[in-house]
Image (tube, rainbow, N blue to C red; front, side):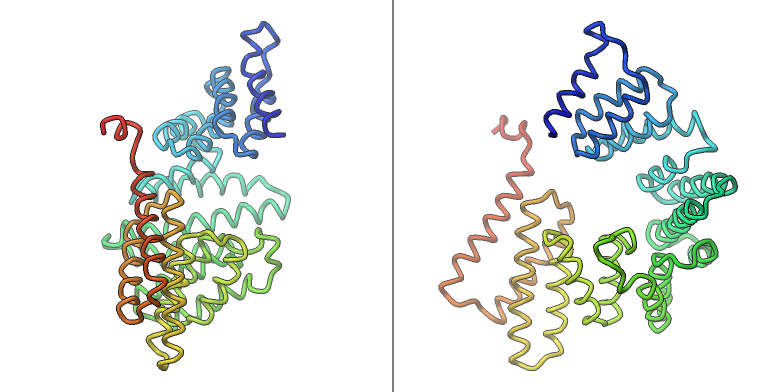
Amino acid sequence: MGSRRAKNAKRTVKQVEQGKPEPTMDQLLAKAQELMDDNNYETALQVVTQAVNQDSNNTQALLLAAILQLEMGNIEPAINCLLRCTEISPDRGFEKYMYLGQFTVELESVRYYQLGIDALQRDLEEVKDLEQAAVLKRKMAEAYVAMTEVYLTDCCFENDAEKRCEEYLERANQIDPACPEVYQTMASVRLSQNRPDDARECLAKSMSLWAGRDSADLSQIPSYENRLALVRLLLELDDKEQALSIMENLQKEDDENVDLWYLYGWTYHLQSEESDADEKAELLDSARECFKQTIRLAAMQDFENDGLIDHARELVAAIDAIRPLPSNNDKQDSDELANSEVEAEWEDLSDDDIEMQ
């Protein structure tokens, strides 16, 4: 099915060269979207490039080109397309500003998110459908959350950082009081203020808004990454049982996530520090297996957090020192870890590196 669609797309791209009628803008955008939905990004980009060549001021085509470039890891050309969209239509189309907010830093990121919120507000004033209005409000709340996170990280040393965080979260809460991310981010702020009890209340409120909903409908619950962030907050608040419960559900959705296995291992490691001798041994074994799975998966994937992997290796070594593996397993496990490191290093070599050698 996918190959037939790719062939159809190639025919679309070559129609003009063959003297056939030029496809319309709607046809090109529909084909590009179809190919993108099939994860055929390269061919989709060829089609949408034809659309941009047909009308360089079509913001829908430029936005789709930017999204495809981002999916392919081409940040600079994506940002150029997004900036072109802002020149053509500065007041309408919030999506471009949200993407720019994600791929810029510090106060520039905040500025783009605010422009996106302004565009959303204009759309909201014209929307009559209640469901569509709720969607726009949720996006506004999430943008305020993103702005808060910038002040929690990149701009944490700004003089008004704490005030900004409180202000943005209050606005988000007023716009969409049922948004779980608002209360989860509020918990992060409370932790930064050394108010752990208030942070627990915020997390309890956040989870109450989605816990127990049908996990088959992922639109009703926070994203995978948001729930990983929730696990980190729960561990910071020493709620390991709740963290494990959430990780079990995350594992059912995606059991090859590197961060998930690291957090599993870290949770078991923390539990081992509070356990008696027999339980401690079992928990350390579980932690070691999770950290090894972290290392294996990272070697297989394009995983960029070297600090996390280094820490996983350090913890494996520390556990080995406390609780050595049976001798018949030592070589096998050592070989597995060594092979994972070699695979990671081999994947890092470019073609040019290989030719030079």
